[in-house]
Each structure stands twice: as structure tokens, then as C-alpha cells.
Image (cartoon, rainbow, N blue to C red; front, side, top):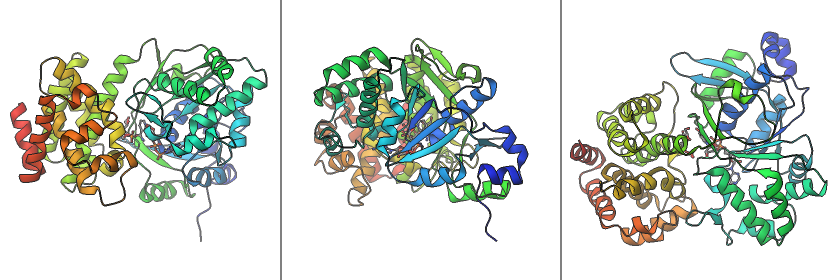
Length: 475
Ligand SMILES: NC(=O)c1ccc[n+]([C@@H]2O[C@H](COP(=O)([O-])OP(=O)(O)OC[C@H]3O[C@@H](n4cnc5c(N)ncnc54)[C@H](O)[C@@H]3O)[C@@H](O)[C@H]2O)c1
Ligand SMILES: O=P(O)(O)OC[C@@H](O)[C@@H](O)[C@H](O)[C@H](O)CO
């Protein structure tokens, strides 16, 4: 007999104690979340659920999904309920009830939500590509066809287009209450970036009055988020079903560790500060630590690991040369400029990569490299060069990416930016064409030589021998 689907009714019938432990469906949806994927479900939604349990308020979440109906089909029939499995030494299963509904291809409802006085916070996780910006200038890409379609009128489909559309409706309603937009994507000063893109969009739409209103009424604090949450697998769904006795199509699994640092802002919010979220005046230090140490390490090893035919981060750090590479990368190159404790950070990152049963696939981390590497690896490389030091291990990671691109160029799986770079005839032209690579790095002789040397090694000696050699040279 088919296992019944999770919903408030079935949970009440089969596991009433769990239904009693989750947020009820009787509160207002003060949060609109754009891009309700795995990460939001395991991170911001859990912290919001926890905050609601310590301090009730109208902070249920209405989610929006963009690239497919998956999240709506998974969550709506379940009344927004789902399970989060926290992996680690002590696994924990948590039920979350803070999500109200998911909108897919319903721009009118997104506009109405943004215009409503109920909505006071917008959170966003739409990947780097969802911002449609040029990483060389941090401005909107005017040549982007989806943006062009939004600017031409009709119902907007991009995140920036929908935000502007909804804020326009809010202004038209005469709502002067503050609203806060929190980007939670792994981008440098994500709030500041998004605020600029919104202004660009208003400019291109010929609406300076709206731009001015947004400057006065909407804040875009930058945030730093940290928790490893891989794409959910069938195994995870089966595991949750066996435990719950109900089919949960929206379950996710991730690390037990969660961090959220937010530039402080005026305006209402759930009691996030009471459940570990940090509000700070300056996120720079937390941001550098997170993007360089966690994401930088991820990106550096993802391509090398794929070249070595490995599947997950845990497979990778089981091998001595790769674990040694991670240790040295953090200790000698990405860690020291961030203050004391690079050695401890290195140990911690190896432990996180090895989290049991997390199944973080290198192929997932490897996506959209042209957009991810600048803030993760190019920034620390630039700092090291400026300090007169060689970013040897970082350049090996970048060489891994270039080898991966060149090998994958026929596969049809590369994103548009990466495809273009994969066909560059030589390293110099690839670096010059890479929009995210600052000119001073593209033109740095040492930087080019280090990458060229690593590329030669990968080609002639293979990935493991090259990793061993470069780590040896650094030690
Ligand atoms: N998963 C993690 O471990 C993690 C940790 C920290 C930060 N993040 C941030 O969250 C983002 C999403 O991660 P996830 O695990 O939820 O991924 P996911 O694939 O589960 O969800 C991605 C969401 O983004 C939307 N999206 C994708 N491309 C888009 C585009 N071009 N325009 C608009 N929307 C788009 C999709 O509709 C989906 O809702 C990451 O890219 C990263 O910036 C993730
Ligand atoms: O989510 P992405 O694709 O931007 O990056 C892949 C991983 O580096 C990332 O998801 C990390 O696991 C996460 O940022 C840890 O907090």
C-alpha cells in the first residue's frame, strides 16, 4: 500500500506529537523568500521556525520557485511541512512548519505579496546567476534576454524584475513601512550588489521616482550564510519516509552547523537574534572568512577532485594528498590574512568536508565556476600577490577549473560564461576574457606562470602527482 503523503492532517493522525512541535498555520506570512531550494529550507526557514517558537509573530514564509515547479509540487500538497535531517556525529530529524506556500510562475501573486503590508522581509537564495549581473562591473547585464523581456513590460520573470515590480505596487499603495531585502547568496556584499542592480533596473525602466522611493524605504543589508546543504537525494527522501511513516517529498539534509551574520538594519524581524543569528555593523570579516575558507576551499578542490574521478567532498578528503592540499591551502594561502588560527580553521574545514553521509557532490560545487571563483579564489590570490607572496595552491585550484572546462567543453553541461572561456585558445586570452578576473591579475606574470605550471603538471603527470608536488613545494 502506498505510504500517505505528509500534510498537517496526516501528521496529526500518525504523529500528533510532531504536529504539536511545529509552527501552526495560523500566522501571517511576513517573509517572502525568492528561490526556495534546499538551502533556504535547511537554513533560514529553520532559524525562522526556531525564532517563532521563542517569540511568536507573523513570520510565516511564502516561497517563490523560479527554475521549475519542483519546490511547489513538493511543498504545497504537504501544507509547507517538511523534514530537515542534520548530519553529523548525532543525526537529528526536525520538522519545519514555517513555510506557508510556494508560488511558481505566479508573478501577479509575487507582486501582490510584495505590495501587501503583511510582507516586511524578503529573503533570497537564487544562485550567483540569478542576479544577472556583470561580475566585472557589478552592474546589470543589459544584453541579458530575460532582463530585456522584463524591461519590455508584461509579467516579470527575473528576481530583479519581480522585486522592482512588487516595490512599484507597494509604493502605489502608499505603504511607507520599511521593508528589508536580505540576499543570502554567496556573493561579495550581496545586499549592496542587489541594491545597485535594483537601481540599474529602475534606471533602464525609466523610473527615477521609483528608484528614489526605494532608496528611502527599502534596505538591503548584506549577509553571510554558512551551512553545507547538498541537493537532496532519493536516499534521503526514503530515509525520512521510513522514519516518519509518511512520504515527505520536500525533505532536505545538511550539516547541523548553521551561521547567519546580517548587517544590522532598522525594521522588524523574527527573533533571529535569540536563536544564534548575529547582527553586526560590518560583515567584512565574517564574509572573507566564509567565502575564502569554506567556499574557496570547496571550489579549489571540486575540479581537482572531478579530474581524479572522485564524487563527493568526503571521498576527496579521505585521500592523503587532497586532505594535505586543503590543509596547506588554508594554512598557507587563504587563512593567514584573516587573523590567528589558520591551523584550526584548516582542521575544521577538513572535518566539515568529511561530514558523514552528507554526500556533497563535487559536480554540484563545480557549477557556475566563472562566477564563483572571483570572490572565492581570485580575491585571496590578489591579496597574496600584493603582499609579495605566491598563490601557488590557489593557482593549482584555478588550473583544475581550467582543465575541467577544457575537458568538458563538448559536454553541453557548462553554463554560458564557462562555455565561452572553455574555447579560449590559450591561457592569456582565457584570463583576459574572464569578466570576473581583475585586469591586474590577468596581466600578472607570476599569476599566469603559476597557473601554466599547474596546467602542465595536470596534463603530463596527472592530478594526484601534481597536487603532491605543489603541496610539497609549498610546505
Ligand atoms: N546549498 C548550500 O549549501 C548553500 C550554502 C550557502 C549559501 N547558499 C546559497 O544558496 C543558493 C541556492 O542553493 P540551494 O542549495 O538552495 O540550491 P537549489 O538548486 O536547491 O535552489 C536554487 C533556487 O534558486 C533558483 N534559481 C536558480 N537559478 C536561478 C536563476 N537564474 N534565476 C532565478 N532563480 C534561480 C531556483 O528556482 C531554486 O529555487 C546557492 O547558490 C548559494 O548562493 C547555498
Ligand atoms: O552553493 P554554491 O553553488 O554557491 O556553492 C557550492 C558550495 O561551495 C556552497 O554551497 C557551500 O557548501 C556553502 O556555501 C557552505 O555554507
